[in-house]
Image (cartoon, rainbow, N blue to C red):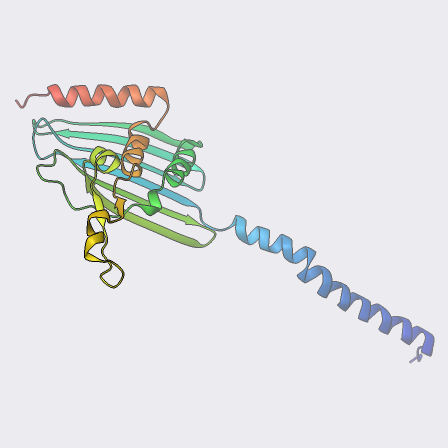
Length: 218
């Protein structure tokens, strides 16, 4: 068996070391970036949003808007049920579109994640439940919020007073600082659902509402 000359052995060692160093640099650097991007692309992506409105008095019993986008495939529907035996559903076929993703971005911008439950108002004419869920980058978040009378919370809610007895003198109690409780986000979120969808979908929703309101049990 022929022995390699020292110069050839040195060349082989240098090549082996160079390959190892190159793999560490590019395999975990440039190639690693591509691996991370591929990992992110495989991450599940899903958006869900639903508004349910229940009415304690006729003619309408319940309305619901239900939207979802899973891996870029959107679907959405509106359903209305009356006290008079009628139920009408308006449903858009599932397909690739940006309607739901843009809508979800609008909800986020209008503060959906900051809403909190509100105690029912006396003699409320409707009860609202908003549900949202998002899956992205291997993380998920969801929220369910209940309230009544979004117009009240947006415009005429009362004020909250705080008293710190360690800092206030009795003579200062008539000049307390207050915080206004009105929050327009409740009405904005409801309006976002009401305004959702392409024109044809909204026209069909309006038609479904008219049919449900005029329905008579047989």
